[in-house]
Image (cartoon, rainbow, N blue to C red; front, side, top):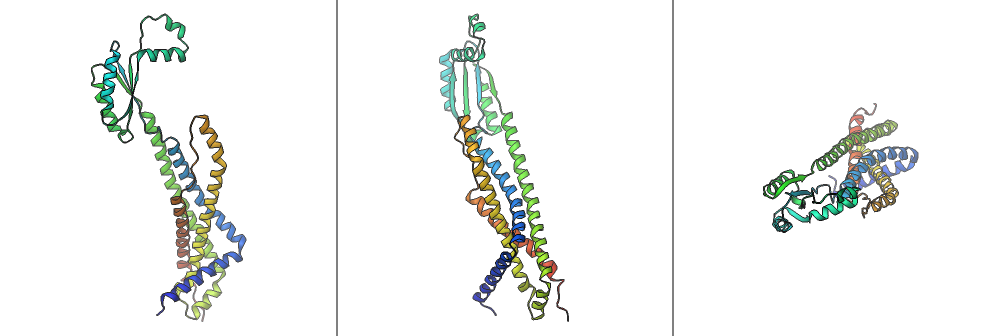
Length: 308
């Protein structure tokens, strides 16, 4: 029987041996790590794109304003009274009263029809309430309830709610999320293939060494262990390269994104990989490398037996 110390020493020896073999072939190691790093950087970059799109539009992506148009002739006092009732309604975040005179003045200022409007004696515009739903009450069902509630007021002529653009925006984000999942799965198989093929070649190059090890009683598990650590190191180093690529791209794009956001009056800053993203990528890269090496080693080591 072997104790925990012996088991740990064997694994440490295998890990150090794998590190040494990678260091002795720097060019081949670099190419393999580069391929893995590029494969892992793509899904991480796509995830950050989706996260930044959601963060950049988070203040309005799910905010759907309702515009309540009152019948002509409704007194402004009645409109303000109904506005107070609307503020007490669950699911309403804010209510803005837009008197008809204010709406006409803004229309006169920005429409370019000021001269034509001078010929109109009566104000053709109604009083309006602008309703902003709360963040937790902006689902389609909740918005429909709010719309029906305000439409039931006898003083109301029309309740307008533009929600189609929100559905389209969320649909685009959903497409991107699914594309991210597909890309992650496809590129994960790519990493498995790269690591598996690299380990296969290494097994073939060390065939004589493996035969001698088995001839003196080395088990498949003992022979396989260094290759598993080699695969895990490939995956871990590839994940580290992917992080470096994404961090570098984020640093290059951040100033331009900040300038663009400032032009629109926003303080948005580009988000980079967070701690959870970093840990998932490093752990996932090492795990993919380990699995790819296991598959290749389990398949090819069985075919290598010492010759009598």
